[in-house]
Length: 211
Image 1 (cartoon, rainbow, N blue to C red):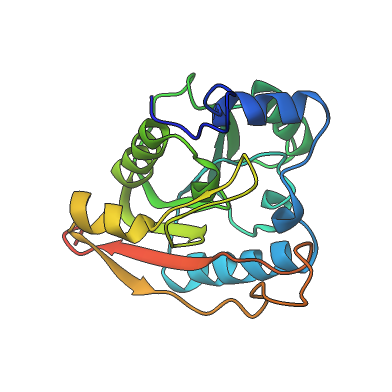
Image 2 (cartoon, rainbow, N blue to C red; image 1 turned 45 degrees about the vertical axis):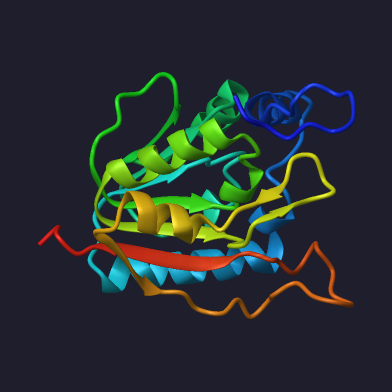
């Protein structure tokens, strides 16, 4: 496994980081709350409506706060944390057509939309990143939506590693074409708070062969 090593510390394990974070009562982070969550949900809800998307899977549903803004009928949330999955099952028990599973416990089906929100830049290990991207694209028959940064840069924060993931898409799934990449109105920059602004943005891909 190729990960991020800092000094004499062992390579960072992104899966264990998130499992431990949720066990200790941590959240999915600022991007899943407040105006950033509202912005993402507005884009996604409109996307599902206008492109007539019937089934959605999210790779990395976390604590489910972001999902609470979604307005669609069929949704599967996947996560590496069993604690997060159990929490989401309780939180959304009233939602008919919604399911939550640990990524290791479910046989993945095919969906109209496969999405990844604020996850890619947390996959610090190369093999974890590659497996994640393969799953993300292979389970969709129409669209893949990624909300992330898109540059190669090692962060000073141990659980963040920026990747130019569009290179992976071009090299590994060339049939998938980017059809939308709107600017984030809450882009992070000098003098702006990381709690209400983000270095991530949306990238929507379509399988040109699906029709």
